[in-house]
Length: 193
View 1: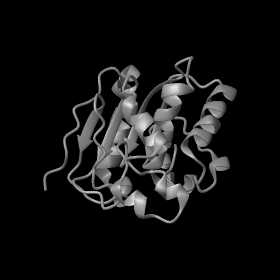
View 2: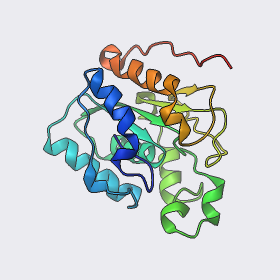
View 3: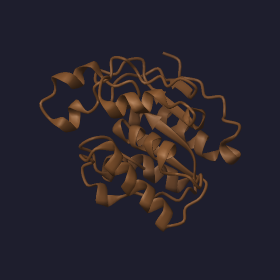
View 4: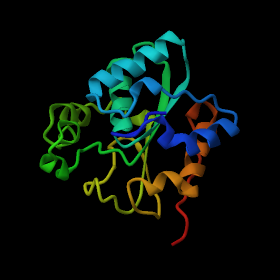
């Protein structure tokens, strides 16, 4: 589980509980604290954790910035292919136009023109192993969370944070986690409006 910026692992606790109840081992990294470090530094911590515990066939479940971190790990720090895939919820894969107006460097890093955002956008080879889940509208990411080459699932909900508690989001993530070897993903349909 990789939370977003200024979120610690407890932010995703309800989802972690549901995954655990479904029989999936869940790993959280308390050492990330409030997830304020740069994407490459945090990705290095995640990759180290995965190597040290010799995890294999791992699936990353991430929110917002966590999806950028997960993709960075998959792109550059997973030569042994320990990570089978990732479900990223409301991740600014193309950045957010609002980031340029933020005072804090930890938020300005999400600018579409930041070096890391552009690097992540250029690299598409791992996208086929990523499922991007997002709602109709995200006030923090007006550009949306569509990731070329990934499995993109738009749900009939809105918001950047509320979507994590939405039952359709939870069921979608549980279905993806349960897919055998994650080769054949289930047909996930958004709920009727």
